[in-house]
Amino acid sequence: MDLQDQLKNLFPDHQISNEPEETLENEHELFVQAEPMICKFEKRKGKPTTIIAGYEGADEDFKILAKEIKSKLAVGGTFKDGEIIIQGDYRDRIMKMLQEKGFKTKRVGG
Image 1 (cartoon, rainbow, N blue to C red):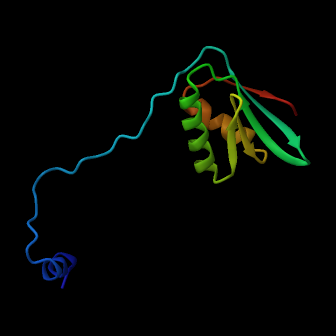
Image 2: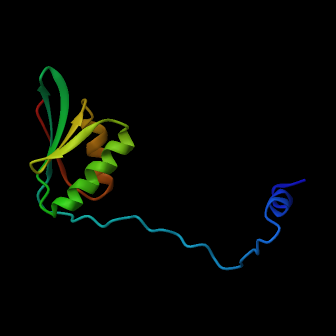
Image 3: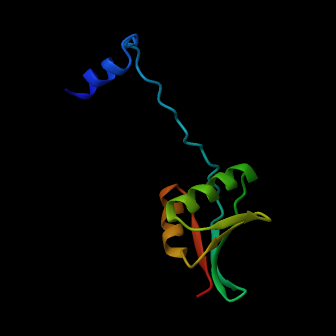
């Protein structure tokens, strides 16, 4: 007995629709700027942090970018005072991700 037969047994009144499924486009277009974004390394309270600053677009877009970076790297961080603060030294990986999105980046500190 395959999955379709099991589903028919569980839900005998269900009618299968032939409509195409909706795909959700969750891609958000970010403002690409002329000036490079600053990606720097600092130690705050003895712990390494990566700070991304210099975004010229809307704060909401920068928050979306922060969330995407945090989820792809599986690290903690925050958006504060126009900067993305990521826990740990991830400058190289973050710069590569930003360059793939079309941003210019500049490495600062170390």
